[in-house]
Image 1 (cartoon, rainbow, N blue to C red):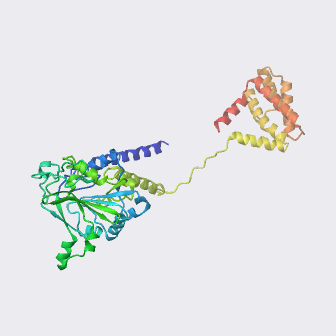
Image 2: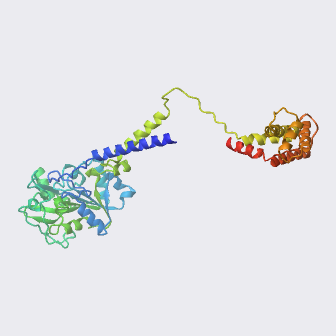
Length: 445
């Protein structure tokens, strides 16, 4: 047991040293600085380019909001039926595939609201998803550089004039002005007539114009529109050409927060922010994802390596084979009880008397100071001379025991009487032979 305790303590010390080394070597990654030219528009990101403040505000205000971490195809399943507004913010890290755009357009045409907040809200792929007979052109006027700090409001809104609503709509409710960044793009709506004239210089038919509902401009200035929405099937598509309005760094300016609320809460129901294309797809191993970036995984790996080493060395022989120790698990009392039962069943009372009398005669000879082979009369007379035992009675008892041992018939009552008389002699002489036998039997257990 002491050897096992030493091994256990050794392994505990090794594991502690490994954990200490792992903790010392673990260096927490410094928080990376946000750059406007490479923003992180995730709702998990708390930096100035992130959208976490807006998401947390919606959640704490009681709106039904969720981070969507699945592919757009899930919008067409039962789990996507509750989604009424799907929001994509800023420059995404994972591009939409053709199958994803097809699923998204089906969801919009079935009555969903698709909100795009980006300085290039209608690139080539998005035009496929939101194709309309009206042409919407987005033009940026400035591009952010490495020196631009998104947390600095003065740098982000330098020489920017606040924009006002052009008409009262659901999106412009309770809004006096919004303050975009100086990198905000402007959108221009080109009617179908001008598109067709540019293509073939032929005037469009009245049917084409009547069946093409015009996009609605909500906020604009002399450079173009900042907020536009238009119908697509049974749903609608909303385009906001500056993500700075909903970002952590700009949502507090003017009525930017109110505009963001009006856009995403125009329809009742669950609001989903696209995190799948922000690189926040479903984690295959939630346990590993929870401890990612900590020394816990490294420590667990080291502990697993030690366990495998122990299991391997447990079955490996480091020396010559040795036989297992043979331990006699039988008790002396079990042997005595077994022999007594056998003698009782065989009615071998002479053997029982012989076992007791042989030891008793040896003790009596030692007590009398004579040899074991001395005669009965000599042993009895010597003992009678040293004590109060009658010599004739003791000699008679010894003779009767020897006669039974030598073959004289004996009943169980007579054998018990002889044993009782031997014990009386033992008690009268103070030999205590029985106590000595019980003590020796207990020591042998």
